Image (tube, rainbow, N blue to C red):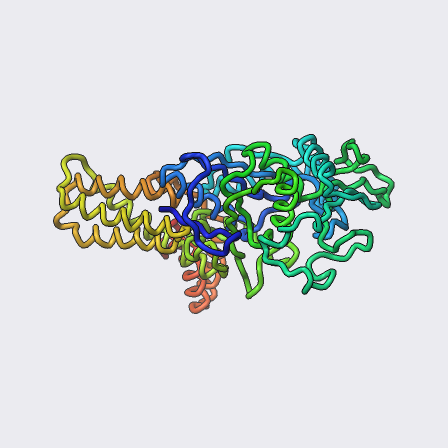
Length: 478
């Protein structure tokens, strides 16, 4: 009885797919003009957990994720420069090179976090015909109009425009949600097709296409509507994204999709909360973003961050700090150690009915936690409770029962994605940790004992131990 919180109803709802056990899932992917920060990646960890829990409950998922490689402007009001174009100017590369490079980095990030790739990656630039066809359909239905810079959607023609975000447009000042454009009929109207501007440099845009309305490029929102319908049909089961998409991007997706096809776009809208740092959301515009590579350079395993994400429900804000990440690493390594011990004791043979019944109780608890709107803190607590119970029963447990328990843990790790059953290869000591190690060695030479002790603690928190021998200090991974 899987329940998900549906932003449409602002309540948990029993999830039942439209077609049997098949689930159509669409996720808003990255705009590939820069590195994804760990706040972005938290959302994709959440999507991965959603997929893995659906699979654990017996569903078959068709997952589609877009890559925004054109049309996402620097302003939600459809003004300003294309974010990829600005990146190309900044890095002195073509926009195509920018999109390709940051797409590859993003895919590497999700691989490092043990996030399963979608069944279908779809780039906006590969689906221009589908976007043009959708705009033509909207035009035929009387939902569009033309102004000097493009073709716009008239939000006044769609009566349910405010439903998802519960907006009261009459109470909002123009410019409060999007910047004001005097030519638009309504402040909330949004671009479907933008005409190619004449750049100050006189250089022609690299990304532009012919259309019935003139040479240009698609607006940001139209790609998701066109591609989700193309691959999943309409309606489909679940649409995911961050909460920052609710009031504009997802509201606009619903408007254009449902206006075009006269039917619901998606049955469930599921949104992840922000990762925060220093009491502010993490974001590129805030200038406080941390990438996964920053975490790796500080000596952390990407799975430490994945484990850290389990410390809060996906609909709750999660506060990031390096100390909190270090605590998560300690918890993950402790978990690995416990599972490794069970693996060493595991054997084969008959398992008593009493032990099977006990394990069945924990399986029910585990299923209930996952079914309660993907409650990962609760799900993780079931795992640790299970391990504690095994430890208390170790005098009575046979190798066969250890083996049964080990298989159960690995089955659960299909959701956690922590690779608990894999052999851990030796890892190189990160440059950051070696710098601390050399600083400590120098501090000891200068007899700065307190400083040396503080550096030892920091090295330990990075997952390494230091031993002072007659031949000199050594460093090893804990």
